[in-house]
Length: 318
Image: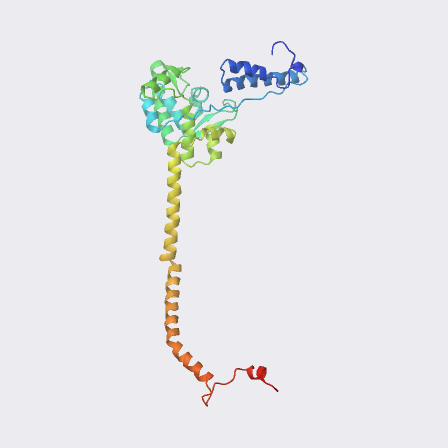
């Protein structure tokens, strides 16, 4: 765009920039982040009175949404290759779906309420600025209680207070990416990200049947659109859904069978069938008698068939 003023940019002001970035093989997601900064710049310029009106900036379609997640055996295979101080960090991420760097590594013991059964994020600490709580389910409680015992032992040995839930020798953990990628490679799962644990937690909440509105509050998704990107329907979930659907049909079919063959309808059908059979037998038995009586009525005393009523009137010559 050079040194052109915003007012002199064409309506598709971002197009030359996008074309140039695409020639550099930049991904659509990368270009969109840069375009978002451009749009923000124009908005700030308008607010300050330096720009009358910024040009429209169109965003690109992003088709590179990651779909990584862990099955339980895969996650535990990675855990076995992680350093001891990092295992509880990733266990909490696997169980809660919280962000590792900004929401788990920053936890202090004041955020853990063993008596009440909660681990907390204070308002302003999260990406969307909202506070959040996660209940201490048994697996999560065991991880935190084990970490508490180790921390207290270290505090006694070093005679100092350690406020951090997760630490290296009492100091907060700043980085874990190298250890993580090494562990994934040794477990035969190269290329996995710590953020895949967040997707895994969302999928587990879906599998457990947790209402979507509750799950969003637990993991910290503010909009359902973002949550749906994480609620990945893998092959296992699809097969589980098919099994549930099949079980539903089996249950309905069994219920119908019991109603029609064992329940009150079956009794009614049997009784009705017996009654119909009895009536049919009785009707067959009465048929000759009825026929005989009919013949007697149709034949007069003198053996001559009486005229059909009204026929004599119609045929009369008088």
